[in-house]
Image 1 (cartoon, rainbow, N blue to C red):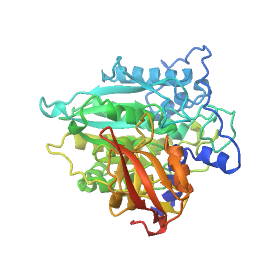
Image 2: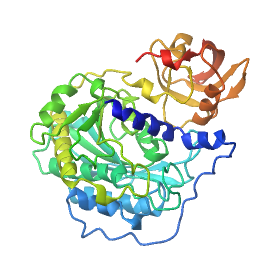
Image 3: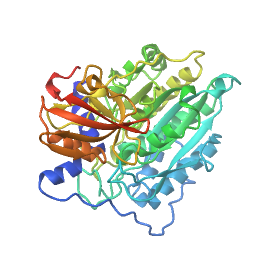
Image 4: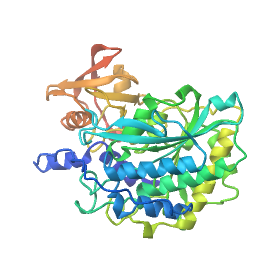
Amino acid sequence: MRRCTAWTLGLALVALGAGVDAARGQGLEPAPPPTISRATFTCPGYSSVGLEPLSVVKYLASDALEGRFPGTRGEQCAGDFIAARFAALGLEPAGDDGYYQSVELASAAHPNAPIGTGRNVLGLLPGADPELGESVVIMGAHYDHLGHGEFGSTGEIGQIHNGADDNASGVAAMLEAARLLAAGPRPARSVLFIAFTGEELGLIGSSYYARNPRFPMARTLAMVNLDMVGRLGADPLIVYGMGTAPEWKDIVGDANLAPAIPLAFEQAGYGPSDHTSFYANDVPVLHLFTNVHGDYHKPSDDWERIDPAGLDRIAAFTSNMVGVLASRPGRLTLVSGVGEREQRVGGYDAWLGSVPDFTPVERGVLLAAVTAGSPGETAGLRKGDVLVGLGSRRGKHEILDLQGFTDALRAHRPGDDVVLTFVRDGELHSVEARLGDRADRPE
């Protein structure tokens, strides 16, 4: 729906360092990466936290967890809570260290990330069928947030940003869906539940998992992402990714018979949340979302504004849908490239048609895709290339990271002839391209 466009583009810009752009536009130097607080404190107890999703939101969005910034003690406490819930549900540990998969946060691709380690939390519900159980459906939600707002805040920096909707709500719905599925009957395929770290810093946790999967991507049937699902009210639940597989229409319809949630559909498979890391690796995806609101990335995003009845219905819908998916004998039919234009680096007129991948690389910008018919495709760029330079009569730009790529394109205009330098299979290449106009790009 069109009312989602501003949120989609705005969140994409946050993920690509829009805050740094704004500072530079005002002649200011961008702030250094936030410092992780290593103060010793005791995690708040969770033995008395109820099973209902709202209780989970209250715990994760409590001031005691200090906004769950990646790598901080508050985020670690949240991860411990999620792992304990996985264990209580009988899910098997599926990480490298029990339920945990360690993730290095800082990289050249994420200049605003702190130096430190975060953790994805993985719990597995093994499939009932010996053969189909070797394949998996993934349900995911990110559990990190903005801490005290040093990075990504649209409100007052220095206050705790509890992120009740973003994304304690997604984690709560995932845990409730896991409870429903674990109660049986168990589906034929395995279901892997993942709470991701580092989403707010640029999909760090999900892109790390995509490079280091518990199940190979070739055996991953689909990924369902829950991000900001806490404010349903009387509005429809927005389902992104419907265009990534033609089977979604029937699967979603069947799953919604009992919850009967009003639904609105978007086709795009790419977007500013963790499902993008899977779609870029040829996995059909869905992203469930109850729309943007005035508390987005502000300290006011707190549990009192959550719709508990709506959250329960979304959890039931997600459980139904994943249950149907995990019981299918056949695979989904992948449709590639849906929604690539939503991922383009934006804010200027010159257009190359590249779709940046959030996977960290030592230098440059890794491409998740190149839009069909774009200047980049005409020049010969393709998925997997790493852009490291862009030059023209306007100047030569070394591309060290996404910010460098943004700066290079901002320095040019539609119709400019440029030389693109990129790495493919370890070898350096250069090609000529003529930049297009964003207004003329294909829809």
